[in-house]
Length: 149
Length: 174
Image (tube, rainbow over all chains, first blue to last red; front, side):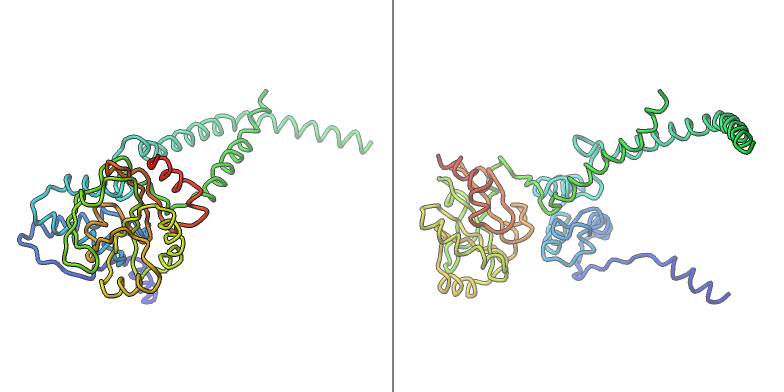
């Protein structure tokens, strides 16, 4: 029982990302925005990490730039737009829904729709299938009988 | 007629196989530059080994390559002889010494030769960030008006120069 609790608590642990350097923010509100934005920006070099996770030099630069821009009073939108200007839509983990990325947002719903149609077709077809398979069973039984004669 | 429907899974399989097979040959690190067809960003950086500061207008004016390099970058060693060859052929190459130290960079150029018409230093990587650089080496083709026309990530060599990179340069240097 105790072991069980241990395992469950281990499974419940969440990933923690650590940033190496710390910045002194002039206002606590900026720090909160900083922590939200580092989790939304993607490291261009190490492609499956946010700039908060990554300790690549480029992520360090991006974090420093982010800090400077926050202190300079830029809005979240201006900062994100600036990063997209330099690195493309790739740099966002939460890409805008336009152009090429639209399909990215639509695809799950399209597949869900296809799945629904298939499911409906299969369940409505099942009763018919049962009926025909009964007929087939009778046919086979007859054939077998004829053969054994 | 219903029998045709039985081929749907096979058709889906073939479609997916083609899509995924294509995916195998795509390079996920090959990101499009967001700066294509835009002006080189403004900068004010020190020229390598001097106290003189250079700005954008000092380096643009003719079709050239902008090569991002550093002594810490192994691929930069590999592409250096080819850059020397291009410089001998008369291709103007602007160096961006990225996140490096002057002393190391100067001794490297003294040892391996200097293919650059001018070298600007970006020790903090600030200009690199504005340019969308995410590693070295990277090579940009810049036209006479100072507009970025092409970006090449990785080594410059015979193959890449006869490919898209060289083509982009030949296009703008006409």
